[in-house]
Length: 458
Image 1 (cartoon, rainbow, N blue to C red):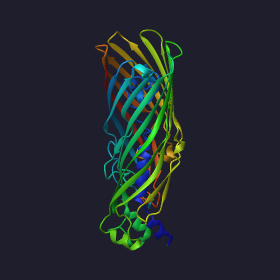
Image 2 (cartoon, one colour):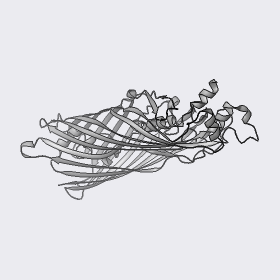
Image 3 (cartoon, helix red, strand yellow):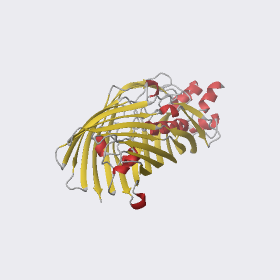
Image 4 (cartoon, one colour):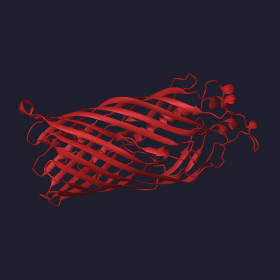
């Protein structure tokens, strides 16, 4: 029975792990958390790999650590207020309109902290500078109402990724330095979605369904949630060249990082569906483990800073995230009943272009501003409610107050606006938890970033 075989291959865990991995790595480019420096945010990230005086260079360009003459401690905190609102509808696997609301505001306010320390050495090691930094390069959260119209595709997506970077910079001359760093990464993923068991039953046994039957499309919803985690090791490399006293040029490369996500899935199955599942193929939709290998993309950044005079400095930067490393995700299961599932993620490489500047009002206050264009690697066929991304425009302002030579406070505000209206035209694999549900609509989205940081040199 081909229909029965297709039904028995349903795998909410497959969709869950694949979606969790996709969502988590979406943040590396489609919604990359660049917010590791409040100063750089005030310039829309322009000059993050070439500007002086910012301790976040431990991860943005370790070569620049050689420009620090004092021990420096810096803490940055950014609150990301993300908003995504859906408007639209869809149909279930049998062509009936999907019921439920629009899901509310899927965004949330998420704090993103970072802390860095730079240590210039002396004596025989005076050309060497060490650094360490804790940052959150990837991760964000979307969560819809549990009974919303797109529940078969996504309900909750929560990704937390934290890096510990240990770096060293070598001053090769008065105008040239190089830096390297080791990155230890920890990833935690939680994802959930509804399961349309009713449509599956009707496809398998149409005689069981009808207007008065307890079985039917969207009548027998279940629920699946999956959690996974892993750690990985990567590296960064940076160069800093200052051909003149006014010009600083920086280049940095962040490597790919291999992760082997190990997940655990939990299911809620309606009581009147469980006996049918046991008859079709015993063991399905049991709490089980599973995982998938994943290689995150590399990132290259080229940055320049030019100081026109004692008051005005201009910065520009371009970065590229190489998404060609992620073509597909193959999920394997501990439950022998489940077959491997391959999810296709044909994302394109993406770039971010930024331009910003700083104006020193006086010895105590520095004003900054910037704009940026941030491309998304996700096209319409691969856009999902977990992160309905689109190209974005950044508009940023910032201010630094230095009450003394050793201490300063900085603040920034950034508005990230979608360049166009993200549309969703997403069908669910008929073998998947949505049983062929189709979602058709559009999103209104934006983000407000509020940052504050403190730096102390001693």
